Length: 73
Image 1 (cartoon, one colour):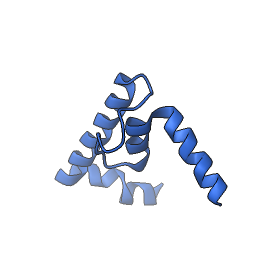
Image 2 (cartoon, helix red, strand yellow):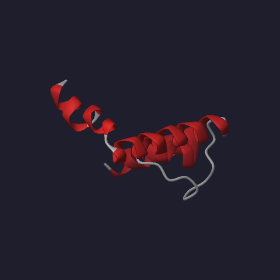
Image 3 (cartoon, rainbow, N blue to C red):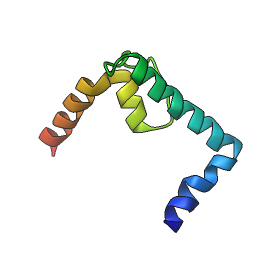
Image 4 (cartoon, rainbow, N blue to C red):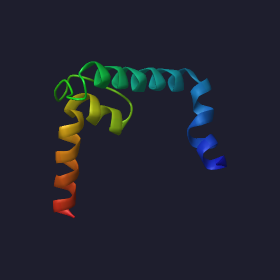
């Protein structure tokens, strides 16, 4: 828990932490507004890999990406 606080939660008080949080929340909004389908690669820039994939590729694209990773491993 202390590691989480040190690496994530304590950063939200800084300017860059607030900007990252705003980007992540925007990615979730785009994902929800697109009804989980995504809006296309390169359209949305967030600060989180997961929200980037979901807002760009949607649920289907995320599943295909996971399948690709499994096949490569």
